[in-house]
Image (spheres, rainbow, N blue to C red):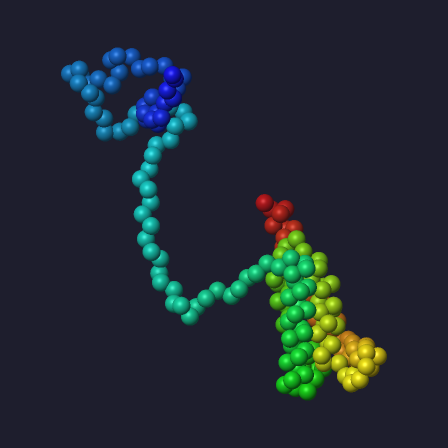
Length: 191
């Protein structure tokens, strides 16, 4: 039965290398040679260095935490934006009596976060999902008491009267996405 070698090879011996002559490695008196410097090493071998000692870095206080930096897909960015706008629409209705101006002001930071948090490959979706989320979030804020027709008419009226906020938020998201895209292209050209 054949046994396979289980020990690692010794540092000086390499497979396929010719054996050393008998006088190599002997000192002037026939004993082992003592050297203070390592001799020239064959090509392709590296000298081992001692492992680096890890020292703990400066302690950071618990109160200082980095800001979240999620990376959302295009669909995730749309769902995030729509969910936040619906929640803000309900809060606007509850706290401010369905003020469309407050809703428009709250829309701008959501546009910025959506454009910043969308991952690089889906940057072009940011200016697309933002207006959709604006319309979805208007449902609880729009005037329209009574049937579906009145609610739909209130939504269309709110979209028409708040077009400035809608265009402004879409423009902000588009500008942020464009700047991030230009940075990505420049980084790829350099690297």
